[in-house]
Structures are given as structure tokens and as C-alpha cells.
Length: 295
Length: 328
Image 1 (cartoon, rainbow over the protein chains, first blue to last red):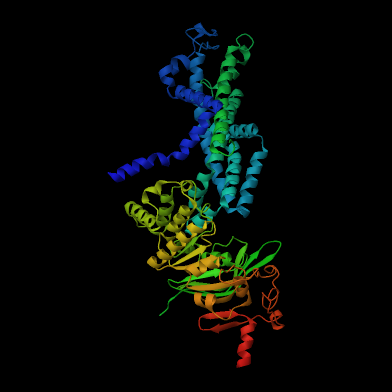
Image 2 (cartoon, chains in turn red, brown):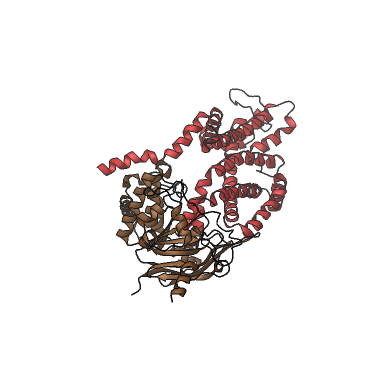
């Protein structure tokens, strides 16, 4: 009984770190705005099937209702094939968020492994790995992604791979510098003195302490990834029609832009909001994870 | 019967950088019995920490090199052990307590997790329940209530953190504990508490300890034997009584004692040792202390002094060697 009580009393303490981060985050109005926006977008993407019908509204063409301005049946209007733009935006969110998440997790994992190895072992390993990263960094991201997609062929998976490769060096550098700053600290020495293996030191002692800059880099990268997917789709190398994607929606609407501006404005706003919400969250997290940055 | 736990002979450690070769430890000999506490004293840069790191084989990679000599822990030669063997020795047979408890705990893990990590590493067959019981037990041993094992290091005070560090070091009941200035970062009242506790614990667990410090008061309080280090060698070693009460001393030891205020003596000023420790990249010939020694003789400048042995007391100084020769 007394033990149970003690356990209950201790539980909130265990979360105190997360809690204090959340309290600091909550104070940042812009970051909260970003978070609310993202949550709404995620909800739309997850429950897209409940809101609209994919086949009927987002994909199948209906020439009778083509190019209708926003009205009460189609709140964002319809495009030149009579597809409901609202439905396409919602299903587009699903693609953008999914590809963004997959890309960031893939490049984060690879980048963290490379950066951790380079930073922790130093010397030759560091030199070789980081020079390879430098080579990748020297090629502009979009060009690189283009080349990869051109080589592998367009498609969802190849799009993820292409975007991931261009982002690995950024993560590798962030992780490496974080590890370098933590590696020299005394508790790492102490962990070694306990007989801890190197991989365990990296995974259990170093990375959790470096999580701040990594999370920030990841959220900021989500924004640019979404932009990157839209860009590739815009030039026709990304998601293939008729799958709704924000970038390809922009591309499709190009020819009608002059007379039906809402066709480009709406997907444009969707991209902007998604990118902005991730950037706001990233900025907010950076401030709240580092209590020294703000008083 | 071999009571010897650790035997270091002719240890030479060097730090090699592109710019210079630093002779950190020069021909160090040391024996430590089971369950014994040895105080290792000396100025900053005398090579105390380097000695401890050599025993752990944790010298900075590629820079810190054990040039020659052996370090024997019972039957194992640490200088020749593989890295995998060393991982098993560290934490299990030899533990180390670092100087600053504020930075030697991982801020992202609870103290309970950090203690059980050592157990996970060295007691492979231990069940989760046994482990958690052992964590409670060891926390109680160092005077922390086991309910606090789910707290993070930042929720503890400095003295409490050092207790946690000690708990981690003692979790596997090591044979040898290296304490590198364990109380320097603590204030005096806490210092006494922690030292008393360490003394108690090592008696309970029959752990031998090398206590590195430059606080002679701490040495007098806790150690069985005392070794005085200067420029990488032990210049005087003996029992606590030899060092604190004995008649003959190395001039450097005299100088160390002359540098502490004494309540029973009436002197107007302290008598610090003149000058600084010699540059370890360019050590003087002969006795390394001769440049600062008030009793320096001609022979000191060229010839390295041998050990002058009387019972348990060894002094490396020509002063006493000459005496023996002249009386013989």
C-alpha cells in the first residue's frame, strides 16, 4: 500500500522534463498556431475517407461540373476535369504528410548512423564519411532528387528514396556536431569506466542528450521535404496523376491560372500552411528544448 | 599467501601529440593489498589521474600511451588485456569515481536506470526483479531512500549525486575502487559525510581503494598507506604513520606539509615550496625535484636517486642514501 502510494507520487516526476518542455512550448503563440494547424491537417489526412469519397470526388472525372468556382457544394470549387478540389487537397495532405514523414525518418536514421559513427570514432572514419557527405551536399538538392528519380523512374517509393538521399548529409552533420559536443563530457567517461560498449554509449548516453537539435532539424526538414515533393510533382517526376498531390495540382492548373486563379491559390495555400506549420513547430521546439535560449 | 591485489611496476606513460611528448608517468612502482586504502597525493600535473586512467586503460586514444611496465590485477596484466576483456574488468573488478559528480551522471537517465545499467552489463543472468532489489539495496547503502530511484540527476544535490556515483561504482562490488578527487567538488561538511560513508562501505565490501587527492587532511582521515607523487614518480611511500609521524621525509613531502596551516605551531607565514613543477615535456636529469629542493646536493643534479627503504617506508632521495653509505 505504502509502496503503491510512493510509486504514484513518483510518476509525475518521471515526466517532469517533457512537462517543462511543453510548458515552455505552450507560451509560444506562433508555435502553438503551427501545432494546431498540423494537428488539423493530420486529422484531415487520417480521416479523409470519412470526409469525402476518394473515387467519386477526388479521382473520377465529371465534365458536367468542370471549373466551378467555390460554392456551397464544392467549397474550394472544381478543376478542369470536374474533380472536387477540397477532396483532392485532403487526399493530397495524406500523400504529402506520409511522404514527408517517410523521407525524414529514412534520412534521419541514415544520417544519425553516419553522423554518430563519424563523430564518435573520429579520425579516419570521420574523414571518409564526412567527405562523402560533403560530396552529396555539393549537389543542389532538387538536382540530386531529379537525377535519382530519373534513374529509378517516377513513383511514390522512388520519390521517398530520392528525397531521403538529398537530406542525409544535413542530418549527418547535425548529429555529428551534437555528438562531438557530448562525447567529451565526464558522464561518457564514467560510462566507459563502467565497461559500457561503444554502441550502447552512443544509443543510450549520447543520442538522448543530443535529441534537441535532431528534433528541430527533423521538423524543419519536414517543411522542405513537402516543398521538394511538390516541386518534383510539379515538373511531373513525382506523384503520378490521377493521384491527388498538391504539386501536381498546381502543375495541372497552370494553363487555367489566368481565368480560374483559385485553382492555383488553394493548393499553394495548402503547401504554404503545411510548410509553415512545420517551421513554426521547429522554431518553437528549438526554443523550448533549450531553456538557455529564452530566459 | 598473496594478499597483493594490484602491482604496478616500471610504468611509463607518455602523451604524444604532434607538438610535444609529455612524460606523464615515469617508472612508477606500486603495490596495493586487498582491502587496503592508499592515498595518492601530489600537486596538479604530478600524474595521479594519469596513473588511475592507466589502470582503467582509459587514457585518451592514440595520444596517451603506456610505453612500458606492467599493471597486474591479481593474475591479469592490464597493459596486455584486449579491449573486450577490459570492458569486463571495468565496472566489475575496477570501478572509478570521477571528480565532479555534477557532470559524471547522464542527465537523461534516472539514477535507478544508471545503477542498473552496470548490473545489466556485468551480471548477465540477473532477473529484472533481482536487479531492482539490488538497486534499492545499494541506494540504501549509500544513504539514499530507494523511492528516489526514479528521479533524474538534476533533482539531487551535489552530495547526493556523489553518493549516486559511488553507488554506481560499488554496484558490482569491485575489488578495486579508484577515487579521483571524489570530494573536491563538495563542501566540507558533505566531504566528511561522503568520506565516512566510503570508508564504511569499503570495509563492508572489502574493496581496496586508491584515493587520489591533494588534500592531506582527507588522507589522514581515510588512508592506510600514503604515496606522494612528483613529476610522474612516487618519491615517498609509507604507512599513514610513516608519512604523518615519521622522522625522515623527502624534502618535497616536507614542503607539502610546510604548506598547510597548522593550529599547534606558531609561525608567522606558511612555507610554500618555491617554483613550479618541472615541465613534463622536458624533465630535468637526476632527481626531478632538484630544481626546487632546498637541500639539493651536487649528486642530485646528475644521478637518479634509488629507493631508501626502512620497514614500510620508502623514500627516493640521495639525502638518506648517502647516510646509509656513510654509516655502512
